[in-house]
Length: 113
Image (cartoon, rainbow, N blue to C red):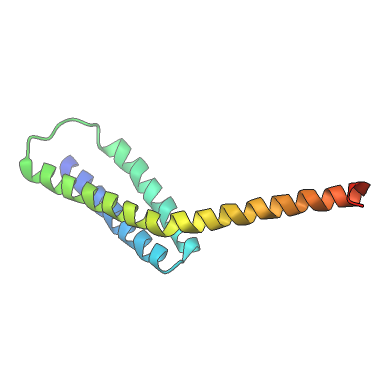
């Protein structure tokens, strides 16, 4: 496989993973989303090693590469619509749990009454 074909194959794999991540986010399957994100990160590392940044004069390569990048970015934007509210709720929960823990420690140390 030529270098540019290999690069496009990796971009294609990342695009497939981002679609799977979006599906997991839509379904609220956070465990699967995290596992897929790890897979995607590994693919990105492979891409860094394969793509030396040398410009390719082939317009078809550039168009396909751009299309795959746009798909990944669009998936990422939609994934954030699902994950940001979840992360906010988690942060609220953790903040409440920390406050409850501090109050419990104060009470147990004789400062509560």
